[in-house]
Image 1 (cartoon, rainbow, N blue to C red):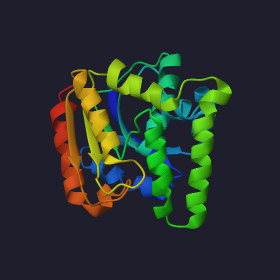
Image 2: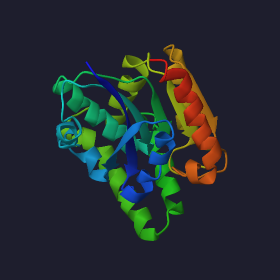
Image 3: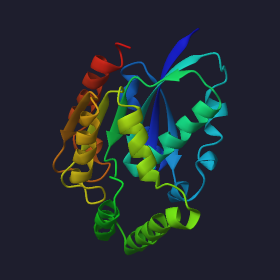
Length: 236
């Protein structure tokens, strides 16, 4: 059975395609294929089966191909995208492996404090309209599990990524200056992963903003990813 390696660039909420596409160059240098999954706020407010439901058929033209997926998840939107896409892989019984995972400016802890931090951080967004839109979304996000009697999306992601998939090496790229997802949230995820025996690497860019570590220091960002994959993905 043939095998190919595909990086899944899972963009941040409402992230533009042209911006997410810029990250492809990091993986082209390694000879990896890459695809993009864009994220919308509404992805958190609907059934997981409806999120990226059309992405799988367009990707896997030959279902006999054994694929190694490396998810590069940006913010909570990216984490949600990969979670739902992986559900499609599993429900369609697609043979695949995840040799490594990369988190950029993510994830939330499954707590109210995480949403509260973003609520206050929304005032730093580019426009007041963006701020109001984000806060309105956060209200809906908080209410959704209660109204639908479903499990909080962040709890589901936390359980899968850090408990069920503890054997997958993980890289965390974050910043103390992030005003949308706190560094404390990311560091809590790092500790959670380590507590389950996961191989973890991480770097705090200290001064960059949310999902802006690559433009802030492209050399360090690229080198960190390459070194991580050389150690953990290329050996699989």
